[in-house]
Image (cartoon, rainbow, N blue to C red; front, top):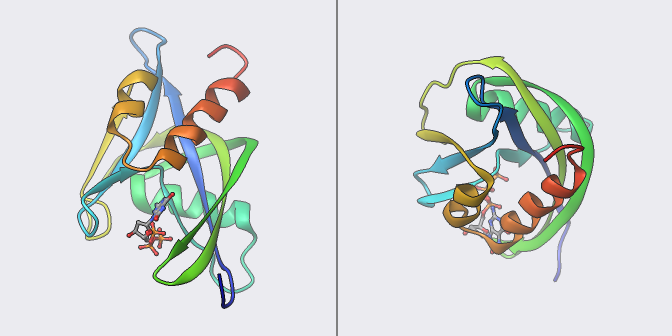
Length: 137
Ligand SMILES: Nc1nc2c([nH]c(=O)n2[C@H]2C[C@H](O)[C@@H](COP(=O)(O)OP(=O)(O)OP(=O)(O)O)O2)c(=O)[nH]1
């Protein structure tokens, strides 16, 4: 790997369904890649990673959230440059999704359904890390 590492941050976003209390995970669909992933994106200049993670959640899902435990950092090469994505578990509070160019759909899924839907194996590992980190998953 060569070049400066691109820094990004995101969240594995979760909530308890109001009717059942069941755990639900929010996944985003990106038409550009036709993939399903956790909300995340690149840091702005000088922006702390956790601030960027919360901003990306709001931009991509329309939801505010409360960050919790840090999750494992994901590393891969994207467009020929090494990339490092820092993740947190985050509980969604209020908000409403509005489709955009970057994200055109979101889904709230059971952990099992989210595991099936996620495109990248690294994102499935993050989901596992969330389930371990949650006190009563
Ligand atoms: N999201 C994601 N993309 C990956 C992984 N591994 C991998 O090869 N890729 C590929 C898929 C895409 O073709 C390419 C860029 O995806 P990306 O999500 O990092 O790109 P991006 O710059 O558009 O996204 P963003 O950081 O602004 O949210 O990297 C992975 O673990 N997660």
